[in-house]
Length: 456
Image (cartoon, rainbow, N blue to C red):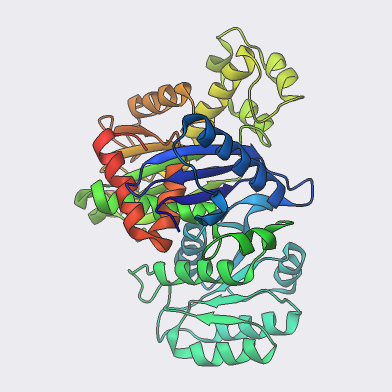
């Protein structure tokens, strides 16, 4: 078996297969449309691999058979990993559980706090999640709510695997209730063990393990599982792992992934001590937010609705934009479409980062005005990485991020203007995250090349 490795990313619109050599350098990359609609995502993978082989034949950089190489894969096809999250108090265990699920690459379809109602259960059944995350109570604190919620889930007929990340004092009881109903349960450490501590990593890892072991979520994915080495990782989870690996190696990082359906923001930073002292609720070092209304293709109309008059000063009216998106395809075909894609990338980026970033706020009480911080402090970010087709693979993406860094909002804790811009033009970030689990030495070589050449 050769030293080269293949990394496949099966996305919602495109499938990319990348070859990396033993030094962690990208040799070539093949691409195809993802073939969910055709009923078999393996078709798109095979076409991307054929495209890769043609490029290799042209440049003469590889003469062997691709079938002999190790291949690893991530996927976000068919809507990604659907989860519901159930905790005790929204600002504590429900929020912590949500952080864990998002960081693992999930799409959250329901968050509940407190005792589940019949309406909550009905909604969960309608959603039909791939995984349920159940939490509640600090360790050795309130037990009744999470135990009752376990009973409601057990009696509901729900068949999804469950991660339990709540009060350790009733862990054995909760697991017994759920397993007696024939449910698969993975119990991990509490996501909120004390009132001022977040502990999301054990739940994140459990969610990814269940995804890799149990979930086949697109037609033909089981065939891809037979082709690849190891397990398939959710693409957003791989990006998060990649961001964490990059931050650990070279410094605090934020990743902006503008996609066709959603815009994801990942940040890996503790923030400044000054802001930390003012923070009213703990934030995880590695945080992911998903904006399901901000996508440059499937949610293009939403982006037009978010634009103010300044976006129409370039000569393209709102009516022009609506006419273009009526036949909107993932790859721009002319200058007007390229220009519109840049506008969409800009509004999606600015809005998603504003929602991800924390803010300075003031409370007024008997002792006067008190300054507090709510949310994630991004002021110590050193690298801002643009990835995805709309940012990472386009020159306009560089312009969008530079504009982002120039914005000044005194109350928002956004990245500093001197943060270094990186365009992930080769989709390397997801590969780094995937390989950090499957082949860590290769992942570190890719990061070394990035650190040396300032490009992913």
